[in-house]
Length: 395
Image 1 (cartoon, helix red, strand yellow):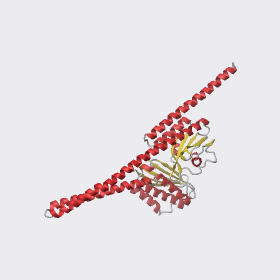
Image 2: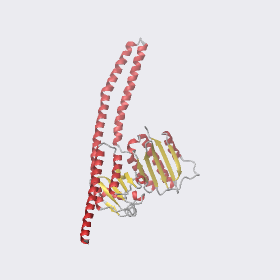
Image 3: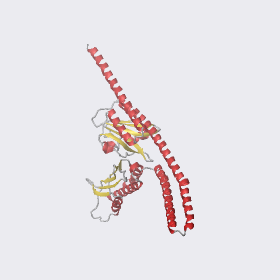
Image 4: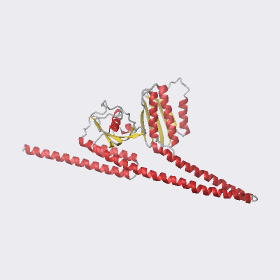
């Protein structure tokens, strides 16, 4: 009877495991279909990635899931989406080259860790901000084209991940990378159609509209001599000629703006410029500043605001290098629905009260006031200085 019961129990356990695996595969399949449908329907990629990390955390039973993607020409990794415990702390964090995610992005191989925060291989990254236990890192995409790195982690003392979870996350990540590629190619195609249409509009405005307006203005000017004895008619015709001249100038400015906007979009975005600015400050500081970026920096921030932001960041990092004698600097750039915010905090010696002339700080305040923004300077705890600069977003 015991042998019979044991055999029946073994069969029941196997069936339960198979049923659990089947349910898990069904959930992964449904999540994959939802991701592909969202990307191909034209949804905002940022929102889709946030939903993607939340779905991975739910199905894998993890405490924290992050997705790091490359930014800039050098491919620095930035945590673009995060879900779970401490997600608000790690979202937008720029990962150093020594982080495990960066090694996975370079090698294209999965890395696992039994205690991530205590792992000597994990330098920087989310494990330095949130205490994490067992974790694994999975590359998204093919070895020839890695789109990003997915980190799946639990808290210390949490449940262990089964091998099947890692395999399913890997397959799900590959399918997600393929869906991202398809969606990106689709957006590129749509963008090319828009650019071609703009080029055609600019060409038609220049070749047809401006030429006809110019010819009409010349015809009216030629009639001025014939009505010189009628001052009211001459004045009215001259006013029409001036209006046509102003209209031609406006159309030419519009053509120039269309082409300049297209050229600007081909250049590097604000995120890449912020990463490059912090990298340039590494030499003068003697260490790499920690950078965190959140929000739609490349889409909702105007060119003028971006230039002012980069100037303020450069001045703040320069002050930290020359005067603060700090050993760490944290840079946070955030875009909300109404404002663009910059926060630079160091652990240096703070501002000397005996120094009364601070031309650099005056410039930072002026840059904020010129854009109806605010500038604040305060002490950092336990030591150092905090620079806060914010301007409202243009409607």
